[in-house]
Structures are given as structure tokens and as C-alpha cells.
Length: 380
Picture 1 (cartoon, rainbow, N blue to C red):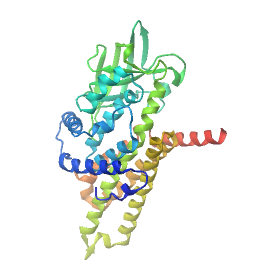
Picture 2 (cartoon, one colour):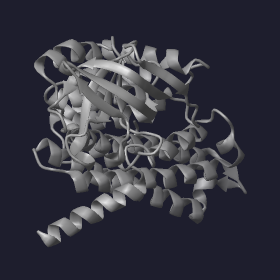
Picture 3 (spheres, rainbow, N blue to C red):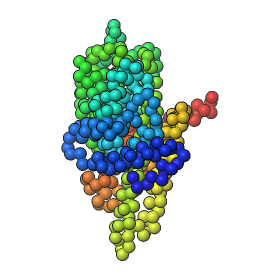
Picture 4 (tube, rainbow, N blue to C red):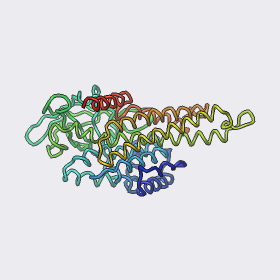
């Protein structure tokens, strides 16, 4: 990335600065926007290469360093959206195991995830329960030493290519969020199927999952019965901040593309950059990025100090994704007709950023979270 001045901010240690530069150098050599028509194959290849490069170990394990995850995502997103997706989903998909899995679960899954030999997925959303996690309907009933799963999940990243899925189900210990449990379901388990593959504007592997009398050993439950909601929220607190970091990477790439366009595009005997309207837009883009970056790395730093970051992560996610949408839209406008040409860098960024304003909690949900936390502070 051309702009690495933010690496000098006091949020980071030397190891973080080294990591960002190493990932940047690796991505410049190994990552390409040209993946071909087979997105599944491209994603599998990227997971394997990220594992071989040693980068996935930063998203997997007992001690997740939020700043490292965020810097890796920001850097990968700058180079390629699918590379960022491959990295992020390995972390999110196995995050519940990293944070709260048993030693046997960690030993069975995490080393393979870190090496890029097993693809992970996080199965939380349902057709009628996306942002409202407490409304989950996918059910798990206990029969002897097994849980039997019935229901559906949808919008599941890595759906169809994952080797295992962390699935959140209503287990009934209590009403609402207190009656949800998390289970690891291996691909190929009888009663589990990919019901539908889902195509979206930025090509990523997505699917709807179906469970019919799917028997899973209770040893595959993550945490105690009824603790699934807490497991999900702990996982999202880590990776929601990293979504914001990915948005930063997209926005930084858009700004760099816009700066190159503005300084090389001839118009009316001068360059596009000589117009005050262009200068004002570039200034706003740069300020939006830095403002969001401060929120992102504040949240990451606070979590790495052991502090709760529910409100801070929501602020970072909202500001970074909404801001990146504005920055990328401005870049597209600056390119004119080229900006909406299929395959152009800013056109790809435009498609990539749109989903980030929705997944892992839409902007409107982040607003509710921020307000809820503020009111909680006032009322406590």
C-alpha cells in the first residue's frame, strides 16, 4: 500500500508494523484480481496459499491479536477482495473454537485451518433471523450423547466449500438468546446438505444450508448448553472490527486509484487534479479514511488490552464501511465511464464494499448497538 503512515500510530507495536509490510509484499507477489469463473476453486487456492505463507495463523489460535487480524485484512483487501474474504472466513469460521473450544476441538480443527488444509464456516444467519440472533429457529434436541439438528441457515460464507461449519441452534435451555448452543458440524455429516448456492454482486462462495435429523456428537458442542449466543457475540466482537479494517483497505485502494487518475487525466489543458472540485473531493476522501482508521484501530487496541469493545467495534464497523462506500463512489465518479466498466479496479471495489455495509451486522444494527451501550452507561 502506498500510504503506510498510519503504521506509525501508537496503537501498533513493531511486530504489527512488520506484519503489515510483510503481508503487503507477499500479496503484491501472490495475489491477483483475475480469478476466473470458478470462484470456489479460487477461494480454495487462496486459503491454501495463505496457509502456506503463514498468514492464517494470525486469525486462528488461543490468543487472537485483533490488531494483527485487522492489519492483515486491511492489507489483503487493498490488493484483492477475495483474498481478504479467504483470510477472514478462516478466522471467523473457526473463531468460536479459538475462543471457547475444548482442547480436543482445538487440536482437531485449528492446526488444519491455520495451514490452509481445512476451510471453516460460521453459520449463524437464517431466512427469518439475520440481525436478530435471538430469533433463531434452527433447533437442536438432545438424544443420548448426540444433538439432533433441524432447520436452515442462509447467507453462509464458504457454504458449499467448507470442511466444517460452526452452527448456532436453538437448544431450549431458556427463552431468547439464553437458549442457543453452538455445534461443529463436519461437511458430509448425514442429514446435512447444501440446499442452495447463492450468487451475489461480489463473487464469493455463499450458500443456504439445510439440516434434517442431523446427528452431531455432544462432544462437538462449543461451550456449555445455552452459551451459544455468548460464543457468537465474542466471536463477532473480534471479527466485526476486522470487517471495518477490510473496508479501510478497499477505501485506500480507491483513493490511490483516484489520485493516479486525477494527476494523469488531461482535461481542458490541465489535469483533473488541477480543478478545485477534484481537490475538495480528494481531501474529503482522505479525511474520511483517516477518521475511520482511528476508530478501527482504537477498537482493535482496546480489545487487545482486554477491554470490552461492543460499542467501539460497532462504531468502527459503521464508520469504516459507510465511509468506504462514499470514498469508492467518489473514485468511480472520477473515472467517469471507465469507473463502471466491468473488471476495472474501482468497479470491483464498488461491488465489494456494498456487502460490507450489511454482513456481520448492518449499519442500522450498529446504530442500535451503539445507542444501547450509551443508554446502558447512563442508566448504570
